[in-house]
Length: 153
Image (cartoon, rainbow, N blue to C red; front, top):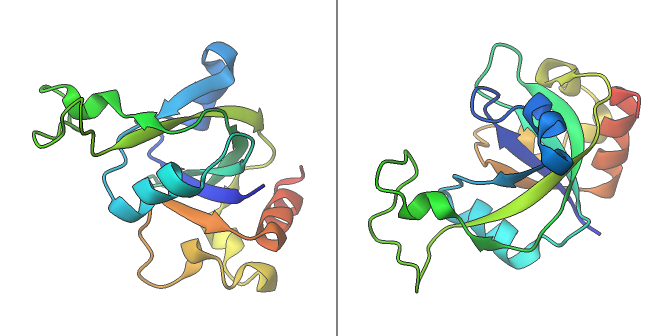
């Protein structure tokens, strides 16, 4: 089992949206970074843990815990001409971008980014590294356990 931090802008998809979705499950779409795509395509497996992170908001932080609920499949938004995520170079025969489904598991206390800084067990977390902008990043088991502890889960 692996662990991941996945960033979502709450105006697009919030953790509350996932909790209210049928089966508490949503497609993780719109990833347009090759490294993040490769994590989903090559390393994520059903059952992996996910720290659902709210980014580009007033108080960024971990909003909840989820799990990967599907294998990788083509992201439909790449084929939709009116979509913000449309990619004219993608074809159904050769998709460039993929999605996975995630299912909400637990909410816990919202854990702001500012609370994560200075926690010794999290100092090597990719999220906290200077210049880190990846929308999906791996999390170690120790980091995962500490974040869940800080969230009261």
